[in-house]
Length: 585
Image (cartoon, rainbow, N blue to C red; front, side, top):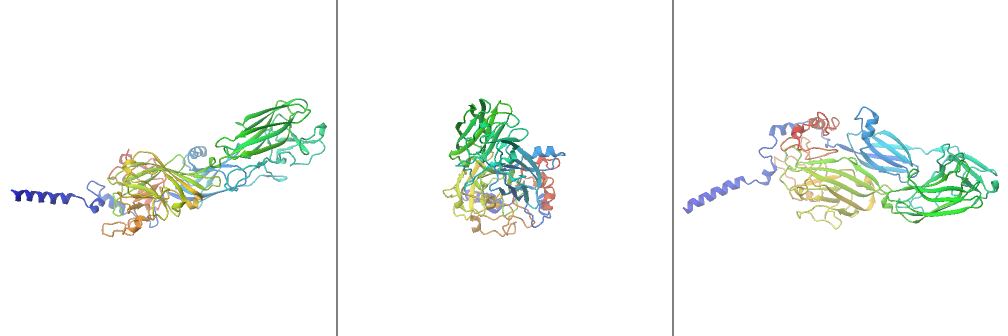
């Protein structure tokens, strides 16, 4: 009886051991996976050797514009619709860059989807907008603005000073021509002249005329020096200047006011533009003496430049003298409140990373083992250098039983360049970080977002990478940087985009060379050129389990065999692109 029991026990153990999968078994396609014939068809595609399955390319934006405080918004533009108006309306949903020049220049490097061959540039100068559609040629976007000149040469319409860190610092009288002395020489009376001839000042008058008086004319002395101005030249109007400010700055201002024919009334309005500026002071003064009016203005959050407006109330075309305006910043603003931004793929759209996790063995090419939808917001300071990267992401599909992790490497960025990382989701104890949130023992800055995809499925999250010292976008590199999957809690096994390098850890692991291995050279491409990971510069719905990608996306094969030059929109939800029945909900 004991012998019989022993026989049954040994038989059971043999059967059990034959059913236990080895690591190699786990790496090989299992029964019920995509058919061998379907995989063979995909592997037999003739893919150009240098094709890396990119759906985006790096572009350089170069803008030269000497106009102080001018702001630019750059949008991705396509000829999707039949009319330009419709295409512009669509482009306004695809913001790529928003910010101001520093030292009259914008120079940025970022990723642009291959779908877009043009950009729409919107330029804002005060309340004036202009726009232009620009071709992206050889990875470059070039836009230049020539400074407006008049008969007397270039006119300086705005005061501008910048500190070493690019923030607006106006700590003295930064108003231009505050005594109205800079302009045409006056006779011993008055002159009505174009605003273009009076440095710094603009008028709301429809004829663009400003009236200057010489001290002593009709018995009226200037309050300071030789000249002063009447607010109303030929019509009831306002004079104004637009100056540099920083959010939170406290500004003291003063102005001298006097009536002309009798008691006149004018207001001082201050604000972000001519329309929304609020009345800070009402001036009511007789015509026998100058009177000083003053106040303090605090620049609101988000306001980078400020209008100071002196506006007549009534008096027709006669009345309201002003002179000797003094503007002084008494408390510095917060320069960090003024930020420029870059978005990938655009402000309101997401890109997608899709992985196969059986590397270095061939997968089933459904590209759904780990799918991450993400958007990258790069925050720049006033000098247009990177101070923070916000990586907004959500895991949208897990088609594997493995416990996979995910991270990125910022190539050529030292770990010490990072001040902090907020906030990764690490639960499996396989990652050891430095105090700043970067992974230990890495040559470059490596940030592991999570080490268990299952605990992140469907949960939106943001990883914020804050830099210790601002760096250029060229030094940062372009999105999606160097993303990678960590296979099944084994920190020495990563999956990268084609030809991207591994981080430090996998370099210590010998690549397997058995006959079933498909990537013996470690370039994350099979001998026929197929990848284990792809980055899609747009929304991507993962194929259902065991559905090969070419059965879900009809144009994928044509795109791959063309080396990315044909059907680069293969992933978009357009007629004929997708077999929705083969896609996950």
